[in-house]
Length: 342
Image 1: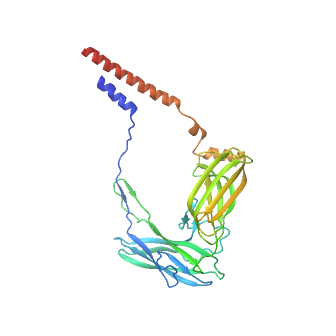
Image 2: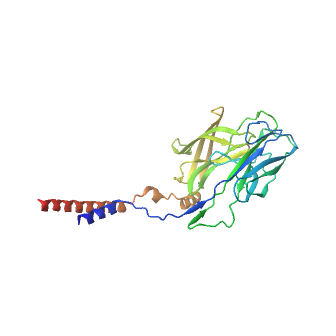
Image 3: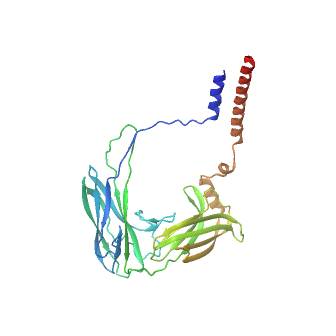
């Protein structure tokens, strides 16, 4: 009896995770990519293209793909415009990026893309990428990246269980400029503000723009949201150590995603600086959240009001009652055992 009750108590207050181990196989990375730096390379020690160019210049850039594996592999080579990801980092990987209205020269459109580059096992292939500069002067710099993505092997045999296929990619940046020293200064604009949803989480989104042809470094943004005419902060967010690509914009999210604003009029307050306070900006902008918008955001968010505010006291009470009952029964059995022993 004592042994049985002890087992029941242990079962009631413990959590057991049940799962089956599945054998899996994953590909390994056996390739590398290197740029061939041309004569007009400015920074000779850089591992990327940093080129001094002129209007109407045509040039062929070369990269080397080294396949050190035992089988032939296929690679996709794309040159993309550098943009700013919503987490405040430079993004070279988007094959179909959003184009900012301030962009005067798209490095992605001015270079050739090469699909299906086949490299034999244990060999290196030299891949050409043609560049055509516009007929006007390049103010500041243009930024992009050459992405080399290794395709998964076709008809790969699966072991018992799941076969995991990893997709490996390399990026070589391309920076183009007409002067060795960039004199263009960064600038920031607040384009628009609104209540939006990202990954089923609700935020206030402020779209920030860098309309100049220069990288914005060490960017820090502090923002908060109030009811229009009020000083009470409803949402507040600070992010630092961010970067913005030339002539790009990104969505700065305020809040933690769990709160849906009520319908009404609001004001966003933003303070930003870059390069450790060398450049500073301040913005305030009013926006309105309509009842229809609140309804749509509330219905589709993963943070429902009941999942945030409601505690399942019935379940908690039931578990406590079971534990108390079993503990009491165990104590009674122990007491009876000792009493009979005496």
